[in-house]
Every structure is written in C-alpha cells, then in structure tokens.
Amino acid sequence: MPLPPNGLFFGRQLNKVHKQNDRHYLLARRASNFIIGCALLTGCSASKPHLQGGASVVAVAIAPALAPQSNILYQGPATVEAAHTYKLSFEVEGRIATLHAQVGDHVHAGQILATIDPSTRQAQLDLARAQAAAAKASARKTHNGSRPDEVHQAESTVASAQSAAQFATANLQRAIELFDGGAISAQQFDAARNSQRDAQAALHAAQAQLRLTVDGPRTEDRQAVDAQMQAADAQVEFARRMLDKTVMTSPVDAIVEKRDGELGATVNPAAPTFVLLATESPEIAVNIPERLGRALVVGQHARFAVNGLTTDAVVIRIEPQADHDTHTREIRLSTTATLASDFGAVGEITFRRKQNTDASVARIPFGALLGTAPNYKVAIYEPASHRIVHRAVRLIDNEDDAADVSGIQVGTQIVVAGQFEAMPGQLVRVVAKDGAE
Image 1 (cartoon, rainbow, N blue to C red):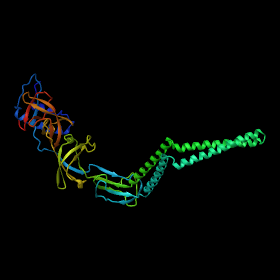
Image 2 (image 1 turned 90 degrees about the vertical axis):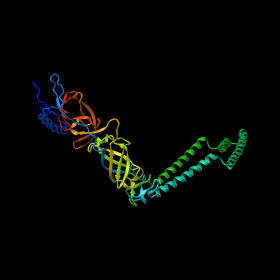
Image 3 (image 1 turned 90 degrees about the horizontal axis):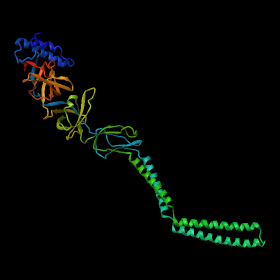
Image 4 (image 1 turned 45 degrees about the horizontal axis):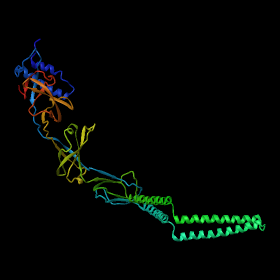
C-alpha cells in the first residue's frame, strides 16, 4: 500500500498524542495544523531522507533552544523575621511586684524585665540559713571533741567512784567476819554485799565515760554531722535559687514582642510573661514555588529590598519538604544589615540564576517537553542522521508558553511539533524550521 503524503500522515498520527498533559497536547495540535498546511502547499520538498524498506517517516518541526530572556530566577515578597524567639516564664508562682519593659522596647542581655513578690522566698532562705548555722555548730563541736574541763570532770567522777568502791569493799569484808561470828543477820550481810556490787558498777561506768571523753566522737558520728551540715547547705542553695527565680531578666539583646501580665497579677509558670525577638542576626523568610526551590542551594546570594534599604542576603536553610497545600518551600536567608527594627516588614527578594558549568540554561516552548514532572525530557533533531534522540532536562521555570530548562545548550535543535509521534532513533522529515519550511 503506497505511503500517504507525509503531511497527511503526520496529521493522522498527531490525533494519537498522549493526552495526559493537556497543555502539551494543545500546543502540539496547534503546530500540527501549521505543518499539515505547509506540507500540502509545498509538497514537503524540505529535507527528504532515503526510505529503506518502506519504513514510515514522521514529519516534525524544529526550533533552536534560546537563551533565557532574563537571569532572574525568582522575584517576590519576603518577610524580616527574628532568628530566635524567646518565650520567658517565671518558674515560681507569685504576684507581679514590678514591671520594667513594655511591648516594643529594646532590652539588653541581663536587663530586669519583671519581678514577683519575694517575701515568701526570702523567709525560706532565712530559715535555711539558720538551720545551716546550727548544723555547722554541731559539726564543729563533734570534730573538736571534749574540752579539758570536761576531761577533768570525768576524771574526778572516776576518783570518787573508786573511793566509794573501796569503802564498799571494806564494809563487805567486815560484814563477812561479823556474819561468820553470828554478830549480824543474813539480811545485813546481803545489804553490805549489794552495796559493794553497786559501787563497783558505778566505778566501771565512770571509767567508761572517762574513756569516751578522752577519745572523743567515733568516725561514724563525725560522718553523720558532716552529712547533716551538707544537707543544710544544700537547703540554703535551693532557697537562694528560688529567690533568684522571682526576678526575670532578658537572656539576649532583643525587642519585646508581647507582654502578658500586670502589676499585682498572679503569674502562671506555664504561660509566658514576655515574648522577645532577638535582634542579633535577623533572618529573611520567603516561600517560593517548589520547582524553583530545587534550583537554590545553601550559600546562594540574593538581593533584598525593604523600607528603602537594599542589602545582600545569603541562603542558610532550605526546607527539605514542600508545603502540600501551597506547593512552596520556605527559604531562610541571613544578612549583615541592621533589620531588627523592621521585624514583620515585607520586602522584595530577588534570586538570580546560579551559573552552572555542568549544564546551561535554555528557553524552549513549554509544549516541547515530554514526560511529567520532575522527569522531563526533550526530543533533539540530529541533522546528519535525520533522526531524533531524547535527552533528560530539568525544569527551572516557566512563563506563559515558554519553559527554562537545564541540560541542553542554547542553539540545540529541539523538536517542537511531532515529538510525541517520533520515537528515539526513528527517521523524521523536517517540514518546518524556525517557523518556515
């Protein structure tokens, strides 16, 4: 069966365009109408490759990849924000006694912001200090041991006990002789013997007390009083810390964004009394389209203009995941400019395309893209073989019907119509080039 005119063949084949991308389809359909008319009027006298074995040849239109019209990658609103936000709460309950900062005030690190009534905490500290003093006195007494007069007193007690014991022993000896002679009764003899035993016991007790007085406290006693003294000191430190917590100070140089509490109000440790915005190293926050976020890298520079000031900014953080609702990524930038007074102000950020030696940026018709995001590719025409090849590209930006991509050089011949019919390596006939046959 003879091959129909190539222009008509292309027209029929274009009806089979994959319609999963309506935009591509509409653009390709528009190009198809042009090519069919061109082929019918001219007889398709353009480049005519040799046909082998009756193989089908697909009619295509090609156009060179152009240089991007602008090197601006993104330009849009951005907001000045603090790099750090501090929410300050009292750690103890109490009533606010003083307030030293208002919303909008600039405060310095260490500056007192507010205090709560310290009377209860002060009383607890005074009690802890008194108990610590008593514990220290007891420890000193234990470690110092007995005083000399206490030793003398113990020695006197022993001497008296010895005299009493000797007298009781002598009385018992006489009682024995009298009892044996029948001069005293058994009851009298028992009384003399019991008195001698009591005197000996008293002597042994006095001697033991003398040894304790001379030797002093045992090691265990010294360790016990040391532990009591340490516990008392810890109570003092705890009470002091609780008293310090009645004073709130700013941890950094900052601006007061919010204050919750008035004089005499009872503070809730769970709720912030002050919210501070650190003035050091402010940041710029911007949400850019997800596809553009992939073109940015940490360290990339941008220009930021706000309230009449234009300054350089550097990307310091790129959120790895895009927002599912807005399809944007948050980018954070740092700047050396003094922007603390502009917190919340909205300015304009400008990102320019980063020059890349590995892949240039070129502009092509959006309809020339094959595939779906992010796996795009384009069909490239090879004049020597009259065939096409597919090459992967990365979509950087698109505007109207144009797309800026990386992965191809400016001037590369791109198939802009017929790209859906022609398979890689298939013979093609160029029926339109740069808008003319």
